[in-house]
Length: 102
Image: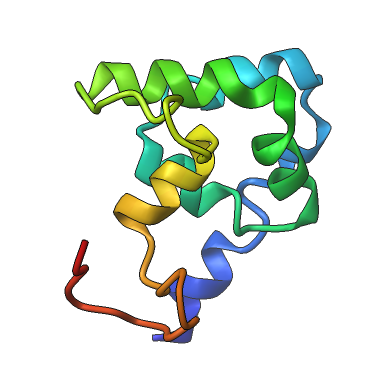
């Protein structure tokens, strides 16, 4: 059973060698939930996806799903995605939440 995990190790290593412009083009086709998950992979992806320059990636992703614009408040698009899809309470820090009470 452990063979399957070993088989997949390193399959995405090529992502580390891609030019930044190509990586941005690829991730621009992801949904906000997937972008949020990718931002937790490592510090490089977190920095890339939370930088001010990533606004268009998040905005286009949000628009494709018909999500409302979050720019009227204090939230950045990635923070909005974290609020909608995240499993951590932004008030108290509790993890693995099942129900969001807005």
